[in-house]
Image (cartoon, rainbow over all chains, first blue to last red; front, side, top):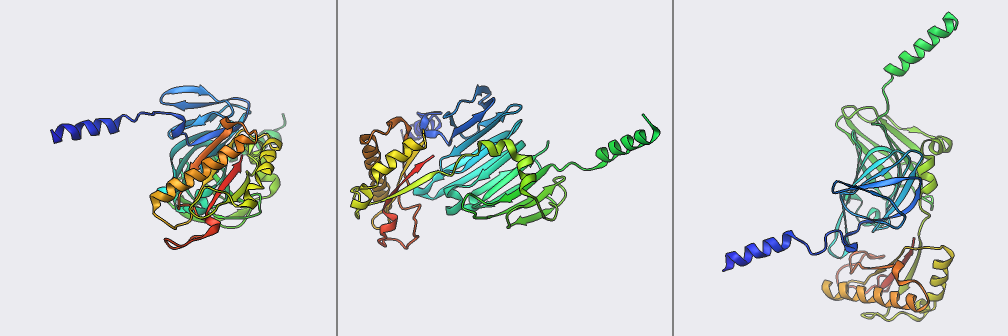
Length: 147
Length: 200
């Protein structure tokens, strides 16, 4: 019986009730110039201002386009044209002191301005490019990645 | 085309072909308050610290250390990052509202700020308001998680009462975990008993 209940509990934990509900959002799109898309679980979605973004989303801007987004802790990331950004990992949980920001900048231009996590837990912030890792301590940093 | 021009063209193309492309460029800049932080750029080959505004380093390949820092001008920064700069969000406008101990009741001077908050929201045409509740460290963690949520919800209700669209307000509860003034456990600190309204 105990085994059965444990297995049931395990299955219940594997299927959270809210997949991609508004509560899981990690960011919102703040501004958009031109065209951009989000790649999410194999689907390509056009960007609209105010749209929620989730962990594992890839943000892609088109030619002559630009986009800015604000994360839950008020970190902002702005992308220039023909840029690609992975929201690899994001946890902002001050109640339980869980903090993590891992963003992967694959190509293009970016402006990163850290929010509350930059003050509370700067060691939890990591920006990755294909060739380097950037550790950030509460600041504003501009990154250009040429593939 | 003259022989000289042809030679110059060929040399130019050869230089372009042989010059390594900077794969990653990192520039440290001040924020809107003029504050400058630090970044450290790390590759398999080494690391480089940036701690002054306008400092730049470049990475030619993952195996090489990042280059020694140079100083880059505002004009060059604008040239490289113009489109991203144009959409970079304004610094959010933040209000701090304070509370009686153990309560979701606002202090009188904070209650008096609410109409100004509502009009700033209108003036900024903001569609994205964060209302974040906090507590000091008096009491158990779970108690403070719940108290800070009640505080955020109280402010949210007051803002809606002043005509702010409820759809644009997002509340969160930070409990004891994000103090203005860090203290030891169970220490009363009025400055931490607060809600921050962030107008983005």
